[in-house]
Length: 309
Image (cartoon, rainbow, N blue to C red; front, side, top):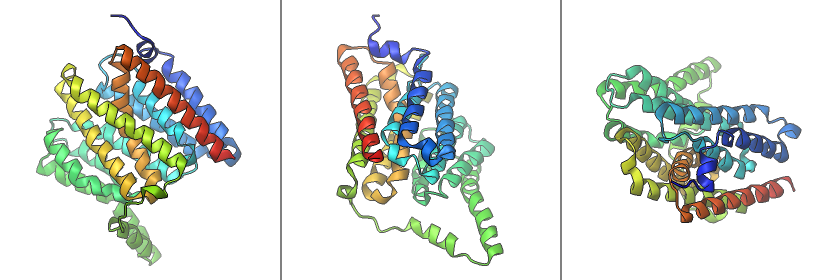
């Protein structure tokens, strides 16, 4: 089979280090060194490493390819205006850690320990972004239907995992004698939801539209070509699809939480788009890949220009 440019790039061992260098340059151009965003950059680098581990451990792409982590880095670089946010970086790191551990309980109804640690990561992600707890019913359903691992043990473990950070927070607030911060945080579970997409700025819209296109395109591709993957991998990708949809809904309904919702979209778009890039081989998909690469580069440069001007 003839390998097109997209396949040569997708299967290249230089793709990941090259993308890492480009991402580092983008961070520097956006002002990471000038403003001292070293912790944020460290979280970003750790997220990239965990995306590599997510792909390797769970074999998300059935050939050698680093497109999952490369797409992740590329999409995050389009949103350089999010680089200063340490809470957002921590939330994204915890979300990827959750997925990495959550997938390990596939078809294991007795994996209460691993389930606890997975949902502990989700509980930590909810500290900067409490609305992520709205995903709990969906995650329990996916644990039952996709991972086939929901039992009373794993369910209790998930609840305890989510509550653990709040136990420590509650103890600290009791020691301080003021429960107001914790109460205000949990009050975010009942927000005033409004559709306010027009309130988003142009850079936010450009990055969001690109991530949305990748999620939709990757979903359509996978639904059409999923017969080539093992059932376990299909279940994981169906989970990415649902969580990606949830990220899009968060962005539409809670535009003030764009910092968090966009990061969730990127985590889900990366494997879907990576699967598309690595496992397609036609003239149309090759042209699509080149167009997406050019658009991603253009959005990145435009947003850097707007951010630093």
